[in-house]
Amino acid sequence: MESTATYDVIIIGAGYAGLTAARQLHRAGKSVLVLEARDRVGGRVWTMQLADGQYVDLGGAWAGPTQDRLYALAKEYGVETFKTYDEGRSTQYFRGKIKRYKGLIPPLSVLSLLSLDRAIKRMNKLSKGINLEAPWDSPNAYLYDSMTLATWMEQTIGLDTARQFFKVAAEAIWAADPADISLLHALFYAKSGGDLELLMNVKNGAQEERFVGGAQSMANHMAAELGDRIRLNSPVQRISQTPTGVTVTGEGFSFDAERVVVAIPPVLQEAIQFKPPLPPARQALLQRIPMGAVWKCYAIYDRPFWRTANGTTPALNGLAATTDGYITVTFDTSPKDGSRGILMGFVLGNQARAFSELTDNERQEAALTAFTTFFGEAARTPQQYIDHSFLNEPYSQGCYAGLFGPGVWTEHGPALREPVGRIHWAGTETAPVWNGYIEGAIRSGERVAEECI
Image (tube, rainbow, N blue to C red; front, side):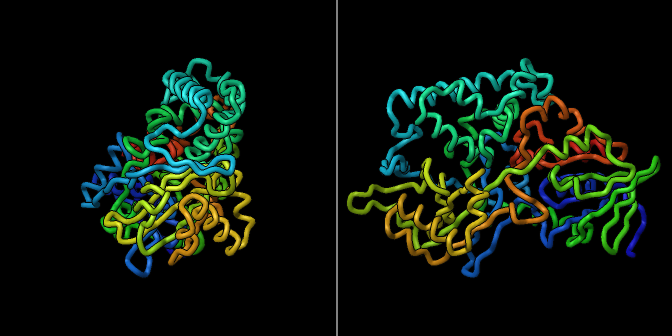
C-alpha cells in the first residue's frame, strides 16, 4: 500500500472548490495532496473537446455579474469570455402554438404576466430578509422551511398559465421540481445569487457570458499549477481521525495529514467511512441533500441557421421555453465566432429522470423533435448530437447541486460548514454567495483554505 510523509492538508475532490483550496494552501507554503476519484479535474464542470476543435460544456458553463472570483480566475489564466448570443427574437411554444418575441417579457395574457410579475417580485422581497450565513436564523425561517416552493406557488400564483411558466423557470434554476425544495431554500438561493431576475436572465444575468475553450479551462490551469500534487483515479473510502492527525485511505493508498478538506457533494460523502463516525447532526444532514437532475442535449450544425431570417421566420437568438415535453429551455451555445451552430436544450427535474429511462436513439429523437418544433426543419438533421447527465456518474449522482427540502436548513443547517475536528467541508453547497454555481465553489475553496491556515 502506497504511503508517504504527512501532508499539511489532503483535499478530497478536484472540482473548483477542491482545486481553489489546494492552490491557495500551496501558495501559502502548505504541503497539499488532492485526491480525485475521476480521471479528470473539474468535477461538475466538464468541457468535452470534439474532433473538429469545437467543444461543449457538459456541466457548468456560464458566468455573469457579481461572479467576481470566477472572472478573476479566468483573467489570471488568460481565459477569454464572450457574450451568450441573444440577438433576435426568443421563442415560446405553448398549447401547440409558436410565438416569437423580443425582450424579456414572454407573450402571455396581461393577467398571466401580471400574476407572474407579482410572484417574482414577492419572492425577491421575501428573499431580502434571509440571513445568507445562517438561513435558519432568518425571520419566519421555520414557516418558510415547513413548506415547499410548490406549496408557495399554489398559494401565491392564482393563474394556471403563470404558475406553469414560473415552474419552468424554477426547474431551470434548481434542476428540480418545485415540490423538491423548501421555500426557505428557494429564498436563500435567490438571494445568494442576487435575485430571481439575475438567476433567470442572459443579459445582465447568470447566463450572460461563456468561456472561450470551455468552463473547465480554469480548472485545467489550476491543475497544471498544482502538478503531481493531484492524484486522479483515487476514490477515498475511509477517513480516520485522531487528536493529532488524519489518515485518508482508498484502494492501494493511505496518506496522513494534519487536516483534510472534503470538497465533494454531500450525497457522495455518505459513501466514505468516517472513523470515529460523524456527529449525528452531520449524518442527518448528508442523508437529506439529494442532487438535482438535469440532462444537457446538444445538436451541432454547420452554421447557426436560426440567427438568419428565413421566409416567415424572423432572426432568432436560440432561446426557447415551453411547458411541454422533455426539453423545456434552450440556448444558443455556438462558439464565439459562429463557425458552427450549437443548440443546447435542458431536460430538468422529474423530466430528466424520465428522460434517463429512454434509449440513446429515443433521447436523440425527442431532443431533435423539440429543436425542430422551436426552430424549424433545419434543426432535425444536425452534424452531431451529444447528450449527457451527471445522474449517471457515480462521482456526481446529479447536477447542478444538492437540494434542501423542507426542514433541512432549520433542523440541520448549522452542521453544513462546521468542521468536525480536523475535517473541513467545502463545495458549492456550502457557499453563502452564489450557492450552486462555479462561483460558489470557488468561494467555498477560499473559505476552507483560510480555516486550515
